[in-house]
Structures are given as structure tokens and as C-alpha cells.
Amino acid sequence: MRIRPQNPLKGEASFVFNGTAYHLTPGKVVHGGKNMELIVKVGTAAFEYCLIHYTLHARSNHRNDTDSHFLLDPGENLAITEKLDLLHRIKSTPGNFPKIQAKALFYTIFHDMLICARNRLNRESQLVIEQVVEYIHHHYMEPMTVKKLADMSGMGVKPFSYLFKKYIGMFPIDYLIQYRLKRAKNLLVSSNSSIADIAESIGYLDALYFSRLFKRLYNKCGSTINVGVFAQKRAKKMHAGSFIHYP
Image (cartoon, rainbow, N blue to C red; front, side, top):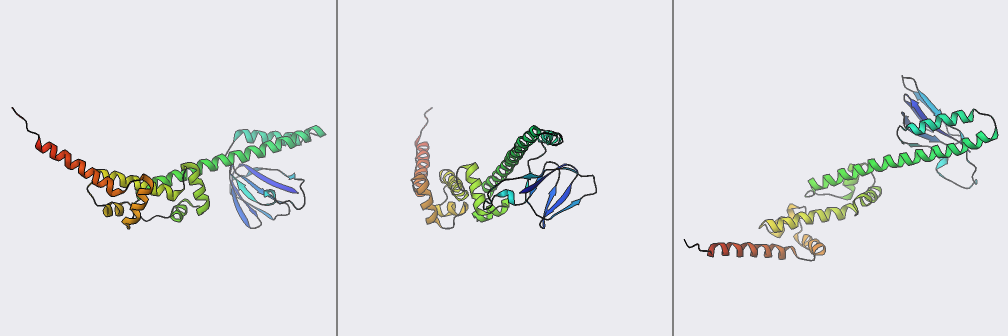
């Protein structure tokens, strides 16, 4: 099986594998499989790239990612560029030992590209999740679903939920509920508003449903906290009113 990874060094171009276009700039790598149709559309500026053909010896019934076309974005990396240049020089050297060196270096380069691409993806996905958390903090009182948050992030519901739990430690709907209830607890302590009003202010029109969620999280009813705080305030007020200062 002969495979073709292309790594641009200068300029930009569009590589089209079997009708799927990939826009290449320095730091990006496109991978294509055997017998795939390839059309290269170069921009107005000069375009330089590194083309590697390699053969993978695998069982005929074995299917993996090397049979497909895909894009990697490891970013511009001087170390990878230097290794590509070294690979080119080794391949130009006759003999069996340079062939072994070239094979080992190729696997190192491909491994480095995969690690760099994964790290860049992790940084970008973490930033997206942090932006979603910030959105929740400012819009928790509005109607909100996991699908809406996933759509905002440009992801499907499952990958979005997976990444959210990975970086935040809980699924998005659980985080939303806990944040709403935390806000509600603060309101119960700091205001004389009714349970229904507080529930509505954090996004729950059903006060009974809100009460069940609140008790499940804090093991207390919201009304208990509200009445307890009101009684404390009343006691303090009465105590202040009964105090007499003698000259």
C-alpha cells in the first residue's frame, strides 16, 4: 500500500482527494491513500511542499486510517521541518543502512506530527469549553439545552459532552443545574423573595421541580433555608429594637 502525506513548507494550495478539498498552509499535513484521485490547485504565490510515499505491509482484510484521506494540523514546527530535510538527505544516500535510518526517521516524524496535532486540538477544544462555561454563567436563567450548547461549539452532542466532562469534571446539564442552584441558594439567603420567584429567576418555571432539584443537591428544602434566614433577620431586628441605651 503506497500512501502520500504532503507537508507544505511555503505558500498555500488546495489538495483535492476524491473530491474532498483540503486547504494547505505551512504547518498542515494532508494524508491520502493508494489509487486516490489527487488534484492540486496552487495559489498565486510560490508553493513548496514535502511529498512522502510509504508502503505499509498489512493483512489484506485489515482496515485502518491509512486507507483514507484526512488532514492533520500539527502547526509549524521547526524540529519536524529539520527531520523532513534530514529524511530527504538520507533517502538520497545509497545503501541498505540509510534505508533503515529513513524508515525509523519516518515513523518518528509521523509520531511527532500526531502528537503535535493532538496537543493543538486539546488546547483549542479546552478553550471552546471554557467559553461555553462563561456563556452558562451569563445566561443560566435562559432556556438552555445540551444541543444548543453543542451547536454553539460547532460539535455534536456526544463529543461536546465528552469534552465538557473531560475538562470540567461533570456533564454540561449537571453543571448547569448546579450553577443555577448555587445562584438560588445565594438568593434564598440574601432576599425575601418567594420560592417561586427565585425558581423563575434562575430558569425554572416549575417551583416544585426546582424544590426537588434543590433538596437532591443540598439535602434541604429551599423553603427551610428561606424561612430560617427570615427568622434570623426578624430576631436580629427585634433584638436591636429592644436595646435601650442609658446615658
